[in-house]
Length: 152
Figure 1 (cartoon, rainbow, N blue to C red):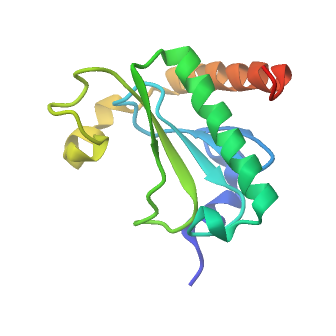
Figure 2: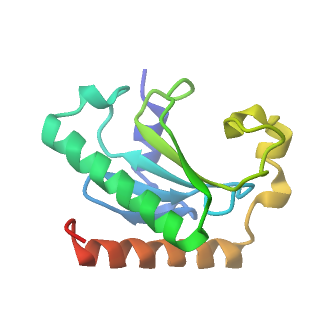
Figure 3: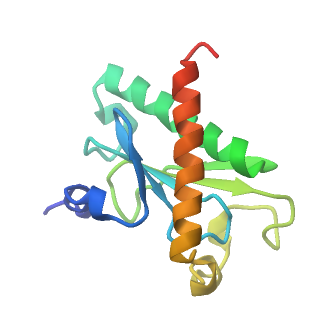
């Protein structure tokens, strides 16, 4: 059975939410912005678990995921960044990076405590203009962090 994420990544450059390509993955703006700055980092390699990846690739992937999270954190100034690598619905490694603020959910817990009608509320989908602005801010911040290098 083909992986739906591997298939979608064949046309990643046509995705209106695509931000940029890194060595080990693709940075994509979340379709819904209930948590402003929500971003996804999809691994280029198929694998359900990090330990399925070749070691050097895995280390680079984790480094790049942290850079994407740092960029989102620098822009949106959350109280806490949530890193979600679940894979229950799609077993292709992909990170959900949620900038969180105190009181952004009724109880202190995962974003997935919220009903789908709230988490995926169409009113939180960015307009075309807002989507392009968010993508450009995130891309610019990632570029700046990459330019500084690992030893920043």
